[in-house]
Image (tube, rainbow, N blue to C red):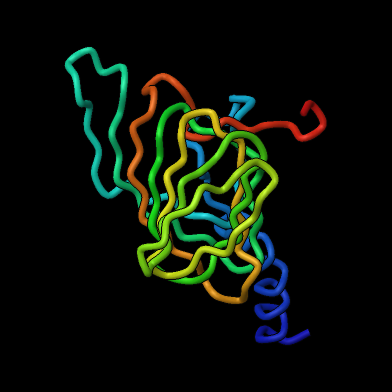
Length: 167
């Protein structure tokens, strides 16, 4: 085997490992030992954050989420209110318990009840109250980009996973 073929063979063995190592991004900022730790093909970029009160019990964040094509997020809740706006792509969004307020890009408002699913597109927004059980999914071949503001309990994970078998 010549040097070029040997180098190509090494690269072909390393490429899948590099994809595995860098293709999954931690969505939840908790330690890896946390039972709520999970990875998906999602990036979570904190654009700004701060504590609204001196006791630092809550954190206010502005975040950009980028969801890769064909990615389904796990069923989860949040430890506070979160609002989001679709900046790019189409997000399939399902409420399992509770309800979410949806505002379509044309100004139409609706309440998404438990068991209902909606397609959210550019300009659509939603309000997720604390502890509402839901998930999102990018069923397309394009990225989904969400701009999100949240007011969460600072001592809780950003997303609390729900085991569907325990529901």
